[in-house]
Image (cartoon, rainbow, N blue to C red):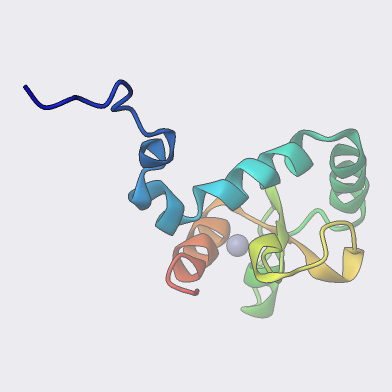
Length: 105
Ligand SMILES: [Zn+2]
């Protein structure tokens, strides 16, 4: 009878490659930022000063913004708390931008 190894569970195999590739690690980090008081305050302040969607404004439209977006995404090295890296977007523009960024690596 060959000896069986006692422990077959290998903890490093629990890391699912799919999650690793989709960048959910950095997403976890970002949620810390977005839930932080510093970001909430900055977001609120930015929103008061920039209530309209920047993307719609470029197209000559006036649309009330719903989200404060990072122009250069945090995971691509964008500044988190720099107002120069922020813009207000409406829901549809934000969704469109996020969709585009999903293809950027
Ligand atoms: Zn818009």
